[in-house]
Length: 267
Image (tube, rainbow, N blue to C red; front, top):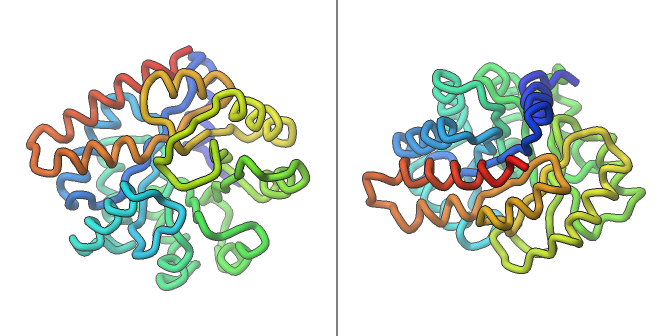
């Protein structure tokens, strides 16, 4: 599996004794132009990996903040085609790894082979399909003509060791370890439990492990980053967007948030 941009990023961070700051944003929220300005500001502020969310009408794994961000993007007419155009525009100002975050329905409707080809052509590095477990993903990957698009997979805190092995074997790029049960943005982060789960997952894979769900402040980021290769933050960014929809300084505000969180990953 060729995941050059992803591999290079994690290797360089390891050499610098830093952990990856992975940021999720719903593409096109609050609108296409503002979304691109936000992403550029966040990249310039130190974001290491971008998860670019493809809005879906029924985002069952997401909490209310990201659900509302998806609804705003859909209201503005966002589609996979427009997300891929955004990806191409991001490549004009950043070499950051880009992971397309989606539910399976939009990809199925678009066509698995076309999605693979068009994603790579636009400059994407991987995809995370939140509702497609390993047992069912052949329906998508069997139509892929190559293996250059990394398939990031989720591991839940309730996942037993044998299943961790199966998921890790079918993954590439990095693994996304969910910090706790529930949906994105929910409270109740147990750093010791996350550390134990991260160590257990690390015993069955050499892939980088990034932890997400419930991380919002530098203090949270610092605690979780000690026992992982990266942290994933989404709801905290989307909450800022929601609270500043008409603020002309929105992109700068998010850039400052990224700077503070990135500093917390420098251990």
